[in-house]
Length: 234
Length: 347
Ligand SMILES: Nc1ncnc2c1ncn2[C@@H]1O[C@H](COP(=O)(O)OP(=O)(O)O)[C@@H](O)[C@H]1O
Ligand SMILES: [Mg+2]
Image (cartoon, rainbow over all chains, first blue to last red; front, top):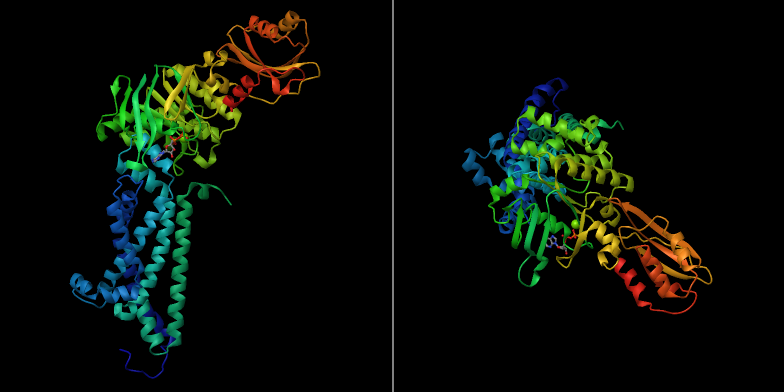
């Protein structure tokens, strides 16, 4: 791809929407699919990880160690390397190693590892006395996890979710560099390889605004989910 | 009725194991409020967790209303727990649930219908005097209000047993008094059997019918509150007496430490003792209160005579027991060990 050096010719302003809007749609699709997978798998995994830990509802120290190590490995690989390392797996799952479908696999894996830790961390912040209260009130383990652990941790989970979405937007841009499409792909092919400053600037503005909006939305949700913040006019 | 037999709880195994409760025997008759006191780390919370079976005893039995709970399988254990209401320290409300929703927690877990839950929660809120706070979140409640919510929640499933572990710790004295008053009122109305665990002796004097002292994993001393407060031979009784500082003795007097030692101490005992001895009696410090209709307390006196035997006899005629405080004596030297021992025990 990078072998061909095109003459420098910025995309005219009028053509920007036609170029950026579909790319933005691809980014949103990628992040959306990944977030759905991450929520569905990462949430129960985080709850499980927390509860097989010593002091959890189903203490299984050995299982906790194994799970924790797997997740740590997933978390420690830089995303670019993870993406390259699992190409055979990606091809096996999606039948391709290019495009949105191929990007979703490594993004989901990295995202699940990320979110599992976020959920675990959020649950850990719930005081043990609250769990005792729920047990004494006659709750089953499932009820305790839902009402006491998750119920109390909701603001922390939403806060983590915000960080997660922003990280996934970043990952999608990285995935874009290997041809996954989306804003990242446009930034690399036009902005980087063709030195098209207009496109480069436009993609930066779009990413900054998107991340800022996600952060504002996340902060609002956290506020809404925390009675003290919702009801006290600062 | 709660009956603990040879209750043993050991944490860990092998060399690292700690036996927190050691073949403990304890009984609380139906409708009684039993206070359990003991130093920090004595195993009070462990005892509470063994009674409501949040922790399984290592051995021994926990019999509640005739049923041995210690051997039940996990599923039945949950039903058993529902018959025991537990009040925790005041901070244990779910922060994202309103007062009403917190009280409804055990009903939610049980799967009670929404209408039934609503009416039961309404009843309970009224019972603890918080009807107007139903929609308040924990951060909007004072410590005392939060603890009332905790009590209402503990009573949601109409338990016959109420277990309170340091339920008033961290509350100011007035709030403690009102929460304790509520517990006694509820006991009277609902015929609850209450185990009230605390390290605050002032609270014990307000709440308890009987008091037990837990130390080294066993109940080492117990008795009815009035008996303990009026029999100075008991170490637990002495530690229940409030100790306040007192003024120093005047020249020519000896300091005496006096405790109410019967249930019939006359109100004018100072005059009587003064007349009896024909010597001056200075009141240097005192703490007297009525517990279950009986006057109890202690006083520090400065008495202007050297005749210890006469003083002891004069005090005894009023139902008091006295020991001279030699460390502070302005004349003579007598047995210093008695009072030193008493003070040490009380600490
Ligand atoms: N889960 C546990 N594992 C190991 N040791 C424990 C555990 N819970 C309590 N202990 C120990 O048991 C002793 C009594 O604790 P606790 O019942 O909380 O005392 P108290 O409530 O009287 O202060 C302490 O020495 C504590 O370290
Ligand atoms: Mg304790």
